Length: 226
View 1 (tube, rainbow, N blue to C red):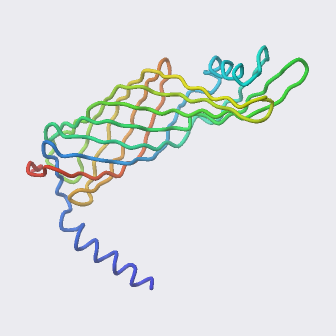
View 2 (cartoon, rainbow, N blue to C red):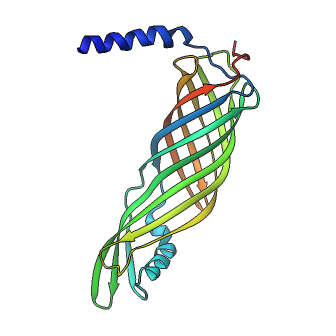
């Protein structure tokens, strides 16, 4: 059974993938869709958002309390997706959404002489539009690119249980920019992987988002790389 499985995989590879290896469709008007996952690092600590948390605590029924936020790790997983349209052979206009679980921390709430704890969860949803420029090299298998974009980052903060009389959640928006680069590595005529690294600037904070996307391109493939 195991041998039959790998035989089928091998046949699919030979029939559909191998014949198109190294032929990258990058014609004007072609479309690229991608899904990605990776790691966000150098994230700002949860304590940077004391004001937002205190507002949420007021909404949750706790006011005039002393709070202490325990910062979690500054490295978190991210996931997202993007759609790009080629306006030339090497220039794509790209829209992207990516989410990072920003922090998963603990709040110590002191009211009078009593101290209790509750969990604090924060997530970032980045929504951007920008460009991706493929460096005009002769290789049609590995295609480096640089990218830059501008948009909005939505921070959502919530807490439940513990000392809270009622749960709370709130959101706030921040303008953001990002820039970075990577490479498209084609494994067939239309499929490939796209490792990339981006530096994110949000308000007064800067962090790094890295990952690998799996992409699929379709549409106009008449203008090919040499």
